[in-house]
Length: 367
Image (cartoon, rainbow, N blue to C red):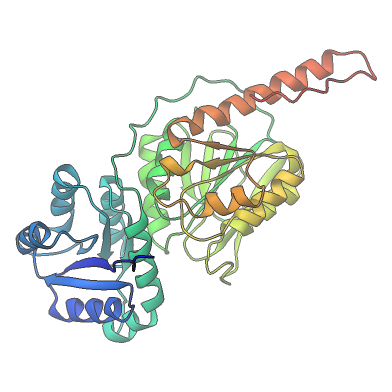
């Protein structure tokens, strides 16, 4: 068997210290080779032509040309995996989300304190994200669909739960922009640090028919609303009469993550049962697979993003292999399939209610 070639990485950062630290961290893994480290996009452009790297790490803030402007040029002229480095601030979050919209695979936040110590503590995460980027599918995302035709109102017991990681910003953006204003309430967990989730929710709220916010304890899950787990805590739901209420608490790591998709899905399985639809989207790792399986076992409908449309086919793959996924769906069709399931369940229930007592249909409406 031929020896696997190392992942060739180009580091782009205006800080000499950052270049040295990132190079040292990545070079510690035998599967990664740092082929170059440059201080601005103009030097990077020449090195890309010369070295043909597999992955670029790119600082958001640089002189002469900022990282976003350079990323836009890369993705339009020579699309390739890019991992962004940004500051852990609201401004940094907004810029990073823009980078993900433009096609960056993932991002890493710079430590607030001592740079060398902070980066060393996250060595495993940095290496894992660069490796995932090297395996990712880089391409332009499909244009968001027009909002689906209103099919409600739906009973307040209906709920949609979505989980995602790497590539999830654009996947969730695509789905929510296609959901009608009267859709059932939606609860979402995305692997993302604090401050970034609030910025993400605001950006979605500006462009979606549904109302989008960062979840807070006590939020009633209303139709036409979506609630995103904050980056510092888990999101669960509890039942209150005919409604669901958000519970935001806990900072323990589940499957290595806080917030965790499994935590949300197990909660939805317990409190919503067959009234729920679960959706697992692009991302590395296995978070969400067990929770989605619990949802399916209790009668919820479950969907997974298919391999061809995932940036990283990790979480959906594990969920599919464990039998948690009822059907794999392309991202471009996901919102439509969710609405089809809702409409189909409504037709099935109306048909069952119209039948004489003691007679029921054995068919399961696929839509």
